Image (tube, rainbow over all chains, first blue to last red; front, side):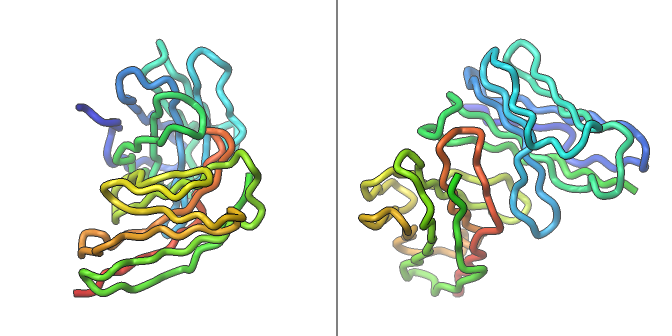
Length: 115
Length: 109
């Protein structure tokens, strides 16, 4: 079946511009996660959505970062006034439920480059 | 959530078993041990997870010590396609996955 998809696959933007990254989770998965991976580093948790509950935003690095999930499906991660340190691969994952007994399925990521 | 310690890198000969260790000495009773791997430029891929008992699936085996303070991921017959970064994670909740920097496994022909 279809996996997690993300778009765009690559995004180059100028410092100060806003960007939107999209994630389409696996159909029926109630949990959705965003992570960031800088070059040569592990994954950094950003935000987590579970069903209709309030999202866990504890990993967002600044108020320039926000995310929403419409209709319990597609999610958009928005970065306002991008900075060079925002350059990274942004990964989305979904899971059948938001507890540790279920694995997360990852998308291919969006590579963001801020010039 | 418990953090993990893994070797930075390992080599393994093709066709041999790859044994990847992970220390998680502060793990608590309700935390699961998960293994993922990330092949260059791709999203992480789930391998296996367990709570107390050893687990086996088509990809790998997971051996968890009796005190649960460490575990070993075993790839029984490593192939060149198994070259990747392997992450050991312990987590109590689905939204607290700390990936760390993992072990870079290189399978040598």
